[in-house]
Image (cartoon, rainbow, N blue to C red):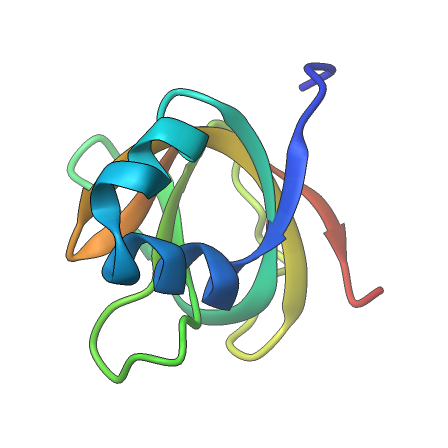
Amino acid sequence: QNEPALTISAIELFNQFVADETTANTRYLDKVLVVTGNVKTSSRNQQNAQVITLESGDDYFGVQCTLTLNATKVSTNDFVAIKGICKGFLSDVVLTDAVLTDTNF
């Protein structure tokens, strides 16, 4: 949570992976990022962890953030900043070990 991070919008991060996954992996893979954007969905995975997907400008895919702590106050379309470790691109850009850093700023 206290690790220094690069801040980037969900749309910009997603677009960089779509445009050139190899270069994006060099820049972001296994790095701590703060990703900002609007909440597209909030759900739970098989381990019952909260997963927030941020809007990317794509109708189907986004930036999927698996949280270490639940963020119960998050609703669809909320503008948030989520800090986590980038694990690459699998249709969605994936962040793990993520925490909600701010909402509605």
